[in-house]
Amino acid sequence: MEEEIIPDKRIDIRGLKCPYTFVRSKLTLEAMNTGEVLEILLDYPEASISIPKSMQDHGQRVLTVEKVNDKDWIIIIRKEKD
Figure (cartoon, rainbow, N blue to C red):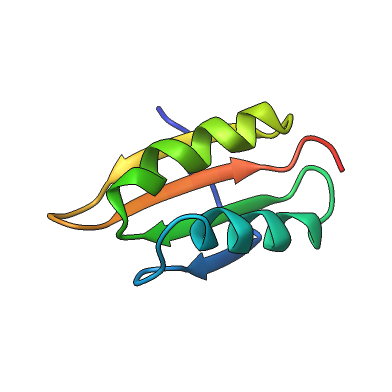
């Protein structure tokens, strides 16, 4: 049985394009505590690839990247370091 991930914070960045998608995600994560989980809802296809890659490059853990309908993705990230 898969454990359900309960986010500590959620942001909806639908309508934003790169680089604003990453900037909003990064600033939100920076304000969170280590170990907390951020859920990002977005609708910009490039960001569904670039945000997880950038977050991993910055030492964070990407838990899931899921396309939830025709145009939206949910990315779940755990803050691993400041």
